[in-house]
Amino acid sequence: RKEVEQDPGPFNVPEGATVAFNCTYSNSASQSFFWYRQDCRKEPKLLMSVYSSGNEDGRFTAQLNRASQYISLLIRDSKLSDSATYLCVVRGGGFKTIFGAGTRLFVKA
Amino acid sequence: DAGVIQSPRHEVTEMGQEVTLRCKPISGHNSLFWYRQTMMRGLELLIYFNNNVPIDDSGMPEDRFSAKMPNASFSTLKIQPSEPRDSAVYFCASSDGTSGYEQYFGPGTRLTVT
Image (cartoon, rainbow over all chains, first blue to last red; front, side, top):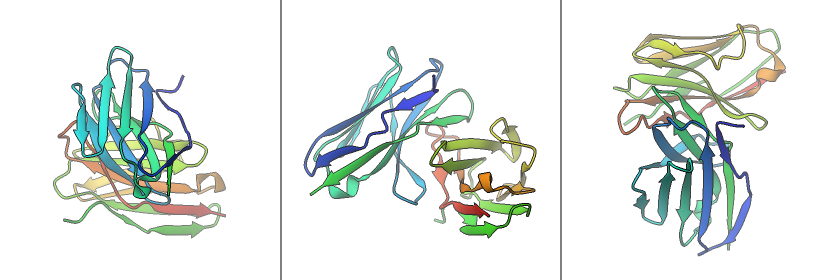
């Protein structure tokens, strides 16, 4: 079993749609969780950290479920510019972080 | 503020040659990470440093790979000798250890070994 697993997609959604991604992790001692966004041929960029109580940043909402060991990302009112690969990232103890393989999103007009 | 700087941005070399990739982390960040990304294997952590000291190099694929961080503002990743299967995008990232250790990535070096 991979340490961090994501549905690779692709997710094809129309503009204005709501889309959700899930990610599961295997290490119950994991301490920090993030969502990164990666555009084609670019570097990963931090989208948001994921806090235990859940957190929201504009159209983006992240949730953490420690009991079931998964995190989620919800994107409301999708824009064309949201088209990218979304990477789930989990940090265990120390500095070591594990990246998921990513979920591809295509938002179409 | 300058982000993470990597050089070169592109490198094409022949099998057997030595390749050196360079990284300058964000000023004030005390942790530095080297990653490799391929279509087949995704983003893999190769090695990371904290306060210039290598902490975990378990992701380094073979003895052909080595990394150094002689000071807080510079790191290198060397491949000697290079092989075609080393072709990938190599990213450097840095973190200041706050906010859960958020990492900030450089633009990457696209390496092609022929």
